[in-house]
Length: 369
Image (cartoon, rainbow, N blue to C red; front, top):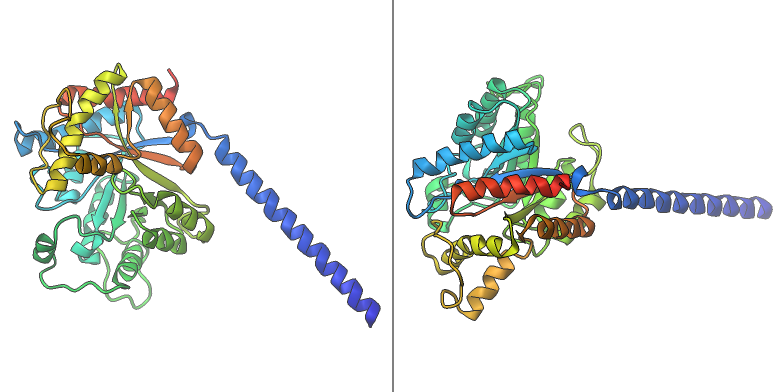
């Protein structure tokens, strides 16, 4: 019995060592996979808010969003997403599904989606029907990014929800409900999304905290972190997502994208000049003033105080602003640090021609040319 005990302990110890070696090798292979990734292997996508200029109409902004989507399709961007914001004078992307339909009708290949639908503002069935309709009309092109923030202020939130009270576990339940609407109906299922059923619209979870990261991991969904405006918890959220990811019918391994504000121009100086429109926009957000895009200025000094400057800089912690070479170096550092699968870019440039050119040069960053 004693001999058997020691043999059993030895076998157990051997198995423990083998398991440990397996874990080490697995982590090494994962590490090597990420470390070998280059910008050329990383997907580039666009998040559009349809910014409104201080000298242009809302129609101009919406039509420019289409122009940008068509430009992105020609350049080879992977996906083009539209945000959802309400009661903001400088953002025209409020009726996300409607604008997606307009853009889908005038593009051919590029994937289109929401970045995202703020689910507390909507009934899950309505969301499933809207995106099921889009997916039926434009097969294999539509995807649905879901967030749990209101995308607006408290007063507007109440106007959107009409007395609906959000509970702590409501968002996870709503996500699961939408996932089911996109599948084949179950036996006895009383509510069926039509259109929606059997469309299998790809669903992403979006967030800037740990909550959505943990939920995305639990459900086995792709995850997009909103580091283009709230970068503080990016590293922690990605780590939590990857460590807790459970393979699913949707995804067999973790998939992460991160938001990055960007301005690319011929020189660093020109890019910094163009970026002052974005700085003024965030300054307006901080002060509770207009969010309309303003012309760039030669210097921000005198426009902001020290505290406001710090707030704007924190907002744009992940921003990459400069020439092709400068932005390439900055993005490679982000890739080395966070090992994401995809970058999704925002760009607040006042001149629409220069904005399109910024996205053109951004693809030069990716290609290495």
